[in-house]
Amino acid sequence: MTIEGFLNLNKPAGMTSHDCVGRVRRLLKIKRVGHGGTLDPAVTGVLPIALGKATRLLQFLQPGKAYRGTIRFGLTTATDDLEGEILSARSVPELSLETVQAALPNFMGNISQFPPNYSAVQVGGKRLYDLARQGKTVEVAARNVEVFRLEILDWRAGDFPELDLDIACGPGTYIRSIARDLGAMLNVGGTLAALKRTASSGFSIEQSLSFADLEMQLEAGTFSPLLPSEVLGHLEAIVLPPEYVKRWFQGQRLPISEIMTEINIDLKIEKNSLFSSSAASQVYDESGKFLGIGQVVESDTNIILAPQIVF
Image 1 (cartoon, rainbow, N blue to C red):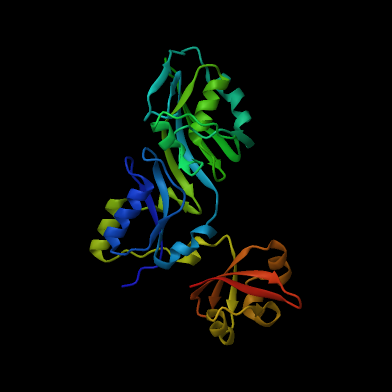
Image 2: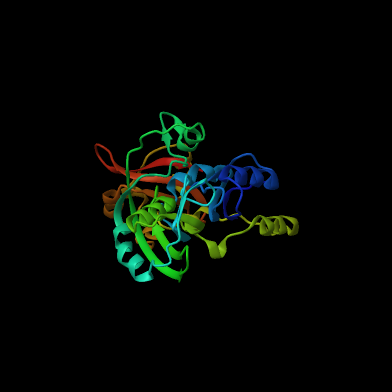
């Protein structure tokens, strides 16, 4: 049986994203498996998994992510989480929630941050965590990232106070860096004590499957991967009339003026809005079968739908 589509995996702690891909390969007995958005081994939660030909669609997933994290104050580590060597530890019972609240706006919106020394960021073709394990210190440029939401969920006072946050952010944002930098701004130190990804690329934790869930569904014969239409809803959808489907599979560019049938008008597809957005679009036949990804571009004489991914 051919398996094509997506799996919303709830990644357990202790496994790398690559480990998860390998286990999915073995369970589903397929070779083509990929993931979207790497998670550190200690992090749990949503890991989008692409199956079969859907691996070619990973680049078109939504970029946004959301996390539920815990920051522990008074502690700093080499990795900016509890996995690394403790660099400093001091009791800070005087730290108040009000003081933390006043500092949080500095981490909202477009911000600049340095990635953790132990991270997958590459410098000179080598990952920072490999260089750090070799005892090498390299200079890494700060990166501009975007944080959309930073909401306090809970506060636990004590010698090493803890703050629970709900965070929504753009790609490339390190929550460990936020924990480290917030602690530094407050002059008490801080590290990430726990992290769960609650949403990624349109996948949510509520609909995710654990490995136990997946194994149970496979044994019962009820597992069904998510279809591209369930995952790519943020992209415009174009329906091809029957006479253009063969030309699509041949890789031909199709004039938008000829494929703007009534069914596309019903879907509120307007060639001007498609062209102005210059974004990728889903492409289907009239039965609802997914045909791939196309882009509306301007040629010398026309506006056309150019195939990007033919499924």
